[in-house]
Image (tube, rainbow, N blue to C red):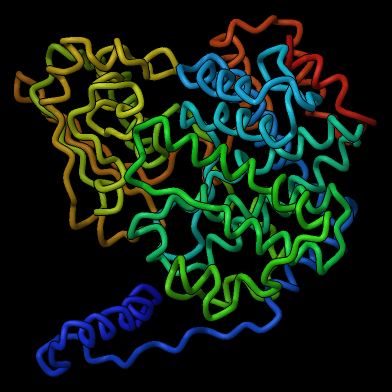
Length: 499
């Protein structure tokens, strides 16, 4: 029995008891699964966080982190110019002057670190262009465990600015936060994501809490309490995908850690075993977890190395990216013109079709979760950047007509390939009868085809250009992050990322 079946069996038996149905009449004959035991798990997380030093992080991990950090800063600039940017900033202004210290990226505004973490988190996720955790297990949806950087970078950057911490301090907190949230996301039962939770909003809250607890210098017990508080704050649902509330969920996760660490530092208490407790996070939010995926696994290996993190080549749901890359290859190889296309069939696994859920999109946000739009815009414009994922583009008559010619379906071959892949099987039928076929499982930016630092820098430049950011400041950020370990404080970065 695989992990998914194991976790679901107890739910099915419970349902039978509630409805009075006979167990013999049901195909489910398994007894309720015993909740896994991992005593001391939350404490082990806290000990790993408190005891880790910058020198403990391998150089390879540091360099991988720098690419995601640079990517995150670029997306915070682009997101500040999104439709959500002004709304989020207006919300912050309703709190009045108060304590204004940390910087909202892409602006000259300052606010309390909690609010800054929220706004910068919303900006990073506004365009759904941020990095994506990969799955180690075959029963996981590839690339949809968490977006790891969005919940960790904003609170760490705010606290480091306020307390004049070094680049090494920032990177230590960042790497610890990303590592813990990814291990938690990998361990929780697949039901958590499959049945509607947005893991960036839930598991991301732990990453934010870890980074803030480290920077606040909390001891082991207070870090355990902070994890209990952060777990309670986390939330988010996949039904919000394609709306402004998906970025809200990510921004809220970034905010949560500042609250959790600050309260714990003041003496606020919480459960000290929130992860493994029978009525704790793993049970309540997932129905179970896999101890082998998390117990004794922190930094062994670091998740940034294995299975790795993808940096997105397009500002859309990551499950669309292999197909998008393959479509671009076929377009250029055969000089395919949209007017000559009769129809396009794109086969995928069931998880891809349910996550890319907007089959007749009418807004830019919906277009990000629409395989039909992603294929259509590439055929029509031969590119799919930040400019393409806007309401007026999605609503164009030629786009809406092309969307009707895209058939996105569950393909048995893609289904059998496993959920740890994004198998995309493509067939383009031309009006003259010619047929072009293709298949892809990974996209540019994945560990199988990674972006170099220079390629991430080019993506950063595109995001900065979208935000109409000065070229000199753009290049300062790129150079500073590349040698982040040499920075004694955040002043150079803050100046380059704000007005």
